[in-house]
Length: 66
Image 1 (cartoon, rainbow, N blue to C red):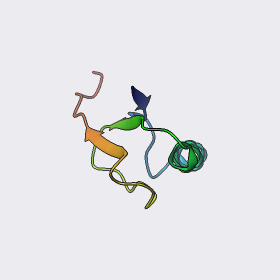
Image 2: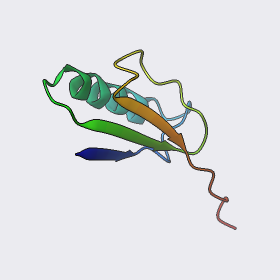
Image 3: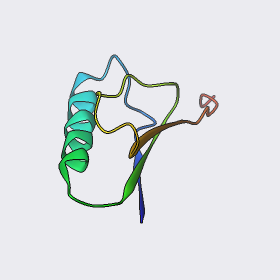
Image 4: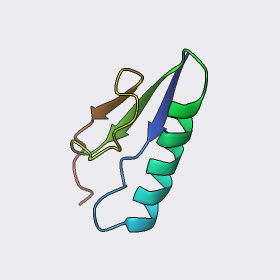
């Protein structure tokens, strides 16, 4: 199974969101499972160094709302 995490609005200026996202990813990485996790972001994120073979960044450029 693949699990997706929408982190499109987590950025360097949103510390609480980043802390929460990183905690989720660390928790996912500690699971004894074969699932893979895709993290959708606006730009290449600075993901925590956990299980890169199972947790993949998926930069997804979206236009700013006008």
